Image (cartoon, rainbow, N blue to C red; front, side, top):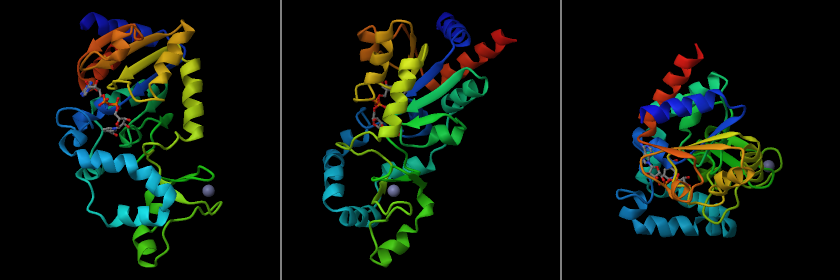
Length: 265
Ligand code: NAD
Ligand code: ZN
């Protein structure tokens, strides 16, 4: 492990355009469960999974009803755990790598806004963020509190409309069946093409199209792909990653940062 951490620090320090990809695993140490693990939300509540799959279809058919349901149904405990969560040392380590000028971009599948809270600036939230809403026509994003949702439901004025183009507003989080917003999809692909180092943290990389990003980067041939994960993943098994540092992101990433700082002096 020590040797791999030193190797990762050396690779990062000598990269020209390093980016990180993250998934649910980087946030488990902040108390947010994953979906499909042994204690995952959907493992424990299959009905919630069925509802999630129907959600986008429902939004397209009846945005008013979708919003009313969102605002009146008892909130899933998952959403509560997201709002209460705080970043952990893994998130802060990536923010520090950016401050050191090494990491150029973080692309996350997580919707928990924890990279933003930890201070990462160049962030692409591939599946959106619970902290934001998005216009489905022009793609503009808004902070949730820019809309008085409680008042809109009382006044029977749901769904919210975009102040710029009058389009319908949806939560920014990408539902099953919903296309990835074109701006993040395009920029993520550009980053995957441009990078010479990809640090993949806490994702099993099985959900597409996100899972294409490491595969696209690998096709170039001139990229170093490092995984930090509790377990081997399909990327490890298919030889997409060059090496795996097996452990918790909250422990391994800060050690990599320490090593980068020690050798940079
Ligand atoms: P996943 O559950 O498929 O994979 C998580 C990976 O992280 C696993 O390989 C697991 O072994 C590993 N892991 C767990 N804890 C770890 C730790 N402390 N350190 C290192 N590795 C750890 O997650 P995914 O690939 O991100 O796919 C899940 C999907 O569900 C994504 O689309 C994501 O948007 C969504 N999701 C998001 C959140 C969140 O926002 N925090 C939480 C659950 C699910
Ligand atoms: Zn708009």
